Length: 213
Image (tube, rainbow, N blue to C red; front, side, top):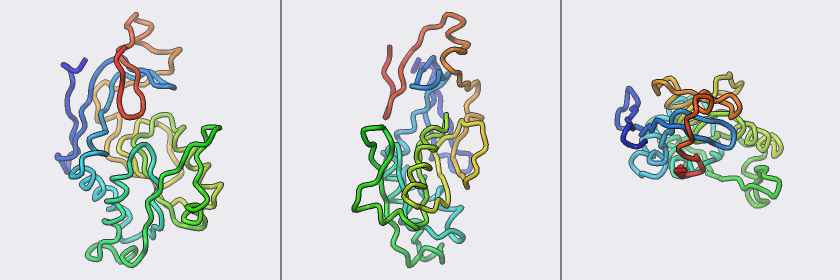
């Protein structure tokens, strides 16, 4: 599985790259032909800063942002992104603003929520949402429901990777898509071509990585 891995780089910034592993993977919702290791972009300080610069560009001179909400381990990118948005040399919109970086919690019903002492940073504030990937749209929908409940004003969504094939109403930016991965396919478990051909699962994808079967 790993022996067939390859790297996909951002065309205009090759330093930002992800390792792609072909195989038969399963998540809680889909079967996938490839696993994208995005963790290095979230955990490596230099790469996280480079990603933050890419994410900041669409908003620098146009969009006031009060709060960055981070999902799926994107807090390091979020912190660097707040710095980039406040850069005096590039932005006249956010230079003098205080920008907060928050991560919601999961309650007992597996719904996203904010603690009482941080809710005021969402209510009537301009919020930018950071996620690792958008595949099924379930995570983003949960986040949007959460922000709507607390009265946040969503001004954009930024993701490292997008394979979701439906259009989102919200302003949306991403670095990589499934089109960057040759042969990438996503199946519902009952309609998986690899399962139908008798190919066994290689690994289960979980938060922060995968476990071989």
